[in-house]
Image (cartoon, rainbow, N blue to C red; front, side, top):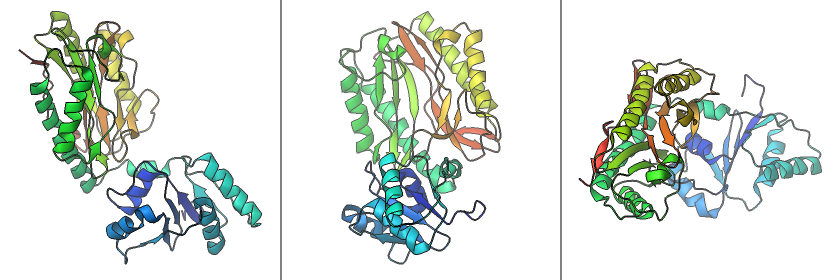
Length: 357
């Protein structure tokens, strides 16, 4: 703030607030909180539904002053700007337009002049490098995810629907330590697996299918993310060959990761391996994304990410090949970029697993 000449910063994005406050398992999907930060004060506006929890998490003597005044958030911010005599107040570009418009109107109604420059993801960049506690939480989330994989491989039988498998998988995670799900789990069997983000449906699993399972557990607000493709019965020679290409792309890219590598270059390496094998037309999504308090955050291994990937960041590697109308294969780990390279949290094997045999 001092370097940029900001008198204050206003934040409303819940993952940013969770990271800054350290208040675990308090923020949900509602946009119910606003932080006003100056060089001297950390102020957080919330309402009665969360106030007691914040006091429990942050402590009455902590650095954050929590306010549950009845005024709306834009009105509250305008009053804080007035009290601080702030003239340059930075806002994140995730701020919703309704809030921004009302804040501007409140300032105008009070005859206050204030510049509102954008942060443009500055907090996201700070969040990109994880500390030891964050890494420990994500490793714990992945432990649950790996255990769930072992469980679901022993549960699936021909005739089960994708929805039934998803229910069992998610129930297992929530019953074995997960606080939440990282996202809506993907269970895609047979030709549905050729759609990278297929939604589980009523299709029933049958012998000869490949099943793409993409899922993760939430633990103390941090996430895991993993994809495994399994075969119902012994895979065909073609299925095994395509799987081997995906595995080669994954492991080649993982071996090339190091601090400072340009994210796009790792993506292009995966494209090169898959293209050389003759499947370049069937891999179109980004190779990987950052994981933390959100399931998609900075940095990433995508074709547009031209920035260095820092040591301490946590990123997925998830190449895939998707043959329309036939089957799809994806292999995903997530791990931390260390001084020695890429260290996955994921413990499940890269071998193609045949189930129901």
